Image (cartoon, rainbow, N blue to C red; front, side, top):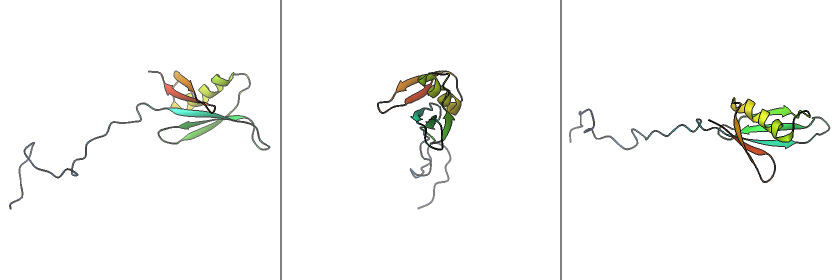
Length: 100
């Protein structure tokens, strides 16, 4: 049998040749924050972890701010936005998503 030399929509290609494109998941990024208390070597701190990439940052606890503000500052710095929506997590911490 002769190979097809057609171009366009009538051409037959194997299913794996052109896999469907998946939508970008980075457009809706989110992060989880958690509080870590002081130890012998570190002061109190907030850890913000990006839920899509796993990237994290650690920020010292600012006693001039309240709890939610400390978590929001770390999340905003990680996600690169200033307007966030917060949802508390049952075992402590928050989940933050950008407000568009």
